[in-house]
Image (cartoon, helix red, strand yellow):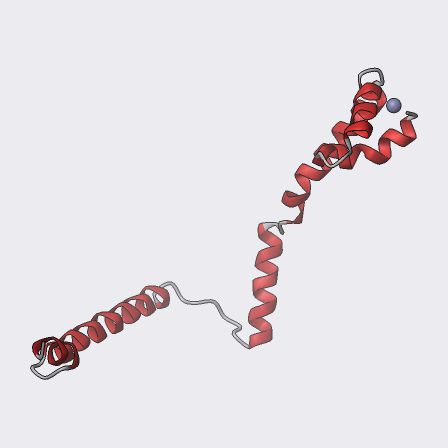
Length: 119
Ligand SMILES: [Zn+2]
């Protein structure tokens, strides 16, 4: 195999999808060709860092958030006290509705008891 032929197979070699015969030829060539080994390393690095490179930076994410907020007309960020207040409000709604549900279902004649008492 010539270097150019090997280079074409390096991505397939990295992913282990070459046929046994081609793989053997690539490996035989790699054992005697430093240039193609370097090429293989470059291919592996490019593949393995591709997923990291695709992730946007923190600044890019901040810009995106800003752009989305502007698009939605939510121009200002939450004040420091608004978020805990909203969380507390949501939590109290959950608690109150849970208590209300327990009260309603514990009344005599309420659905779960009415069903179990008849048995
Ligand atoms: Zn070579």
